Amino acid sequence: MFRYLFVLLSLFMAACTTPYARQGDALNGNIFIGTHYGYDDKPLGDDRYWVSYRGNLQTDTPHIRIYERLRLRAAQVTMASGHKYFVIEKQTETLEPNATAPKDLLLEATIRVMDSPEGVAKNMRVFEAEPTLHTGEGSYLFH
Image (cartoon, rainbow, N blue to C red):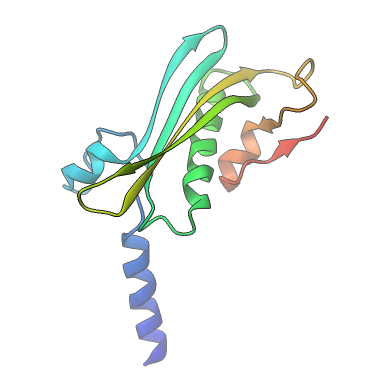
């Protein structure tokens, strides 16, 4: 009995998280979630990209998941551009009120993609894109 209750509770909790998809995509017929939450990105030139992820602080627990999804999108952009590494040059966090939830967290970052971690300032984290794609946690190199 408890096993079935645990499975049902797990499925319910999984359904409550923000889906990982591009903002504006309709997911499972839920237009509101598809247009409001998720990731976005655009090229800025000179191997730099703007990436963002908007999550719901009520359903995305632990909140670190929102940060992991921003790094996951940065890794995907890096790999799609033919590079292996990225650094987050600038990151902003904005808490936004929402009519259906207590608050949304919008993360925006400027990333620089590269083939080698050489020449990056010592105080910056260099993320390797390939492991980040598999874990979502953002493997990074200290140098």
